[in-house]
Length: 100
Image 1 (cartoon, one colour):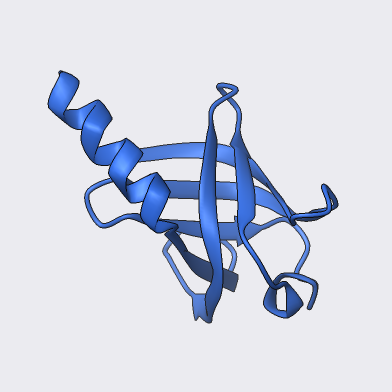
Image 2: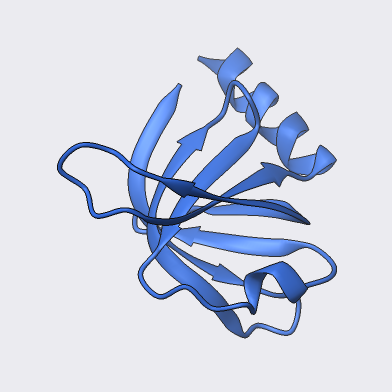
């Protein structure tokens, strides 16, 4: 299940480290984030990260970050980050899918 939304990413200290459009893939347990402003803060974080989505829901992500550039038709080229769910978040996601 893919969800396109806007999200804000916070570190364990509650500081915002990135925000922008994101695609949440519950099946793969990952988030693809296209930040509004590219800063090196995201790649320097340690510990779990909290992604707050527009609908008020939250996802917990690991500090493993894959950075790449994405060039899509109709969208300006720019940095993109792939983040993965924590083990606990994967379990919560699987539980929600089994409920219906």
